[in-house]
Structure formats: structure tokens, C-alpha cells
Amino acid sequence: MNKIDSIRPEFVDRLPRILENGVVYISQKYATAAHNCCCGCGTKIVTPLKPGRWRLETQGESISIYPSIGNWSAGCQSHYWIRGNRIDWALGFTPAQIAANRTSDQRVRQQAHADRYRSERGFWGRRWDAIKGLWRALTSWL
Ligand SMILES: [Zn+2]
View 1: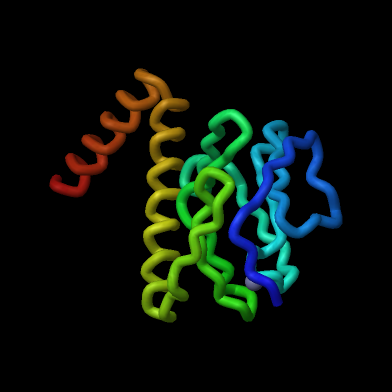
View 2: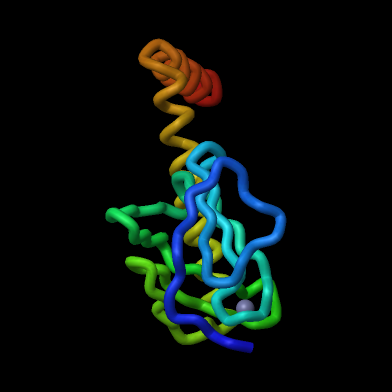
């Protein structure tokens, strides 16, 4: 298996079914990127580009994806960063770190959900929630 140390972005409409090693396919339309694991194990890694998941930064021809890519559900346990088309290999995570990372991912996702909910509810929706909360507090107190 050959670890690679650079990757090339390819902007596509639709992600291809078969990915070429060393290429990260980016679909702005579906807000998703995908690439084959950079260790050469052939695992397809799909990174949704949305709040709480991954963020894509482009600078001319070079791209970075934050946060790091961790392939711990597959056997290889690879962990690396894609920064400016370079692969920065990180040390593998211990199972405890993987668990901690999952929880923090979840927290970020929940926060993103809560923010969206609040902004979609709008002003009167929030007032109504407040009144309902007050009412519940009052009735439980009486
Ligand atoms: Zn791998």
C-alpha cells in the first residue's frame, strides 16, 4: 500500500462511482467531496461539506478540507489533513480519542441544528416557545 502525500482537486457535478487515487472529487452542487483513502487501502471516503461536518477551502488550484480526515471505521485507521493539496499525516487515534472525537462531532452537529431551528422559527416562534415554557413552569408550580 502506498501512502500518498499530495492530492489534486477535481470539481465535478456528480461524484463518479469509481474514484482515482490521488484525486479529491468535489461536487459543489451536492455539497460533498469524496476521495480514496490516502494510505492506498482503497476505501472511499465521502466528506459532506456542511456545518458540523467538513469545510472546504479553495485557494486557486489548491484546496484544504477541515477538520482532519479519519478513516477509523475501516481497518487502516488512517488520519490525515488535506491542506493546500498536501496530505499531512497525523498519528493514528487511540479508541478513546476516536470516541471523544465522535462526541464532539455530534455536539457541533446538534449546535448547527439548534441554530437552524432558531433562525427558522423566527421572532414570533421564539416568543411562543418562551410563553409555552413560562406556562409550563407556572402550571407545574401551582
Ligand atoms: Zn486507508
